[in-house]
Image 1: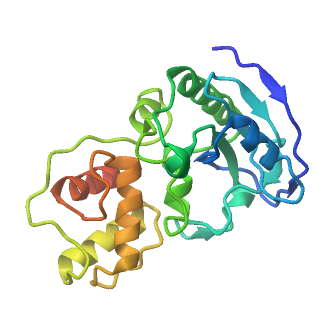
Image 2: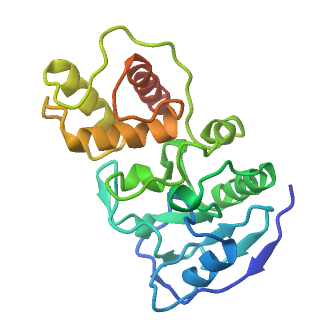
Length: 242
């Protein structure tokens, strides 16, 4: 797929201090793509991304990849914070959970996949570092959400995805404690989340489990670590290590 871009420069950027090795996917969460584009270019808003992909597949180029766009905010992944400095941000037009969340059209996802391929041709981005906004800021963000086709991206060669049979054992949920919770938290931390093991399944752990499910177990997004959620985590860790 040959890509073409619509240049729509945003003033909301500054200098990078290191090369980019991460791609963060967002949804716009606004009622229209035009409204989102206007906000991403508004100097008062102080937000931006490198690209915005419309529902019909059009790609707007807002900030040069060599510059730091302001899309991640307070963020954490694999021990790093301030992820604007090491990431390329892609906004994907969708009203989001507030304005009528809906499936992402095929044309749009085809453009996202092609764009990922181009970006990865310029930067060294591992599959473990193609993530969602909700992964790096689970207490603040839900995007791109459980309807985003992460599996389709992985099948095209971008990002991680696994299918796994349910692991044995009772579900772990808020209020639980013990070695099983500790192991769950340790696994989430190893994958990338800010989930320091304590052995207590608290509100923060439930929020991170929900974020994990939005990305890797979208059939069930409830913050409860059932057998399939835990099994997918184990298999993802193996895939990430491989």
